[in-house]
Image (cartoon, rainbow, N blue to C red; front, side, top):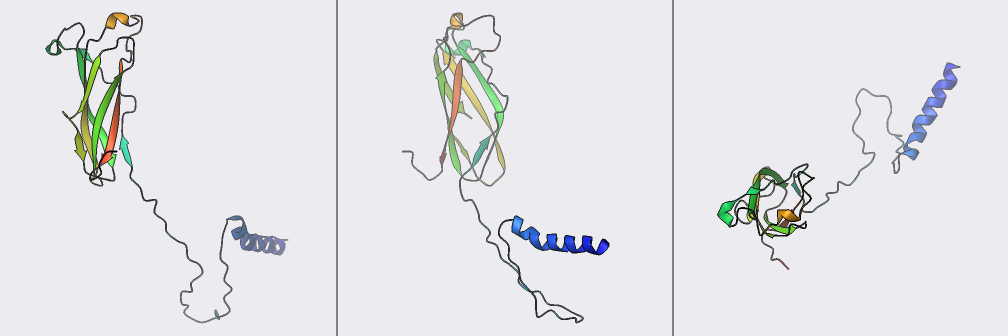
Length: 168
């Protein structure tokens, strides 16, 4: 019984490469009992690199909270706020910029900046922290539903341009 089990295991061992996709089998006639063996090439596989630009901006669960700002004008219609130390990781040199659009009945005229303007990041050098700031004027909070606490009034879009490339 043990002999049959060992034979079945040996047959499965030989058949398993057929289930694993492509394989190469080499029969070694030149291996004869001796004290040392030499390496024999059995197979080769190509190493492929997916070449491309990638960037990651960690905004998971984050929101830019704005507060009244009388320095922008009417304190009842002017708001500003920042999201500090947002982590950016990239494998290429890039320039980032921010656009903002109103997203509620409050309306308003919104502006967005990254670290006070456009931001340059160097790829392959680790991570960078940037500040995303927004300011809104003529924001009519009376048009919002007061029963909800935090409401989205604008949406910031981060855009990227590889350094050395001209925008279309």
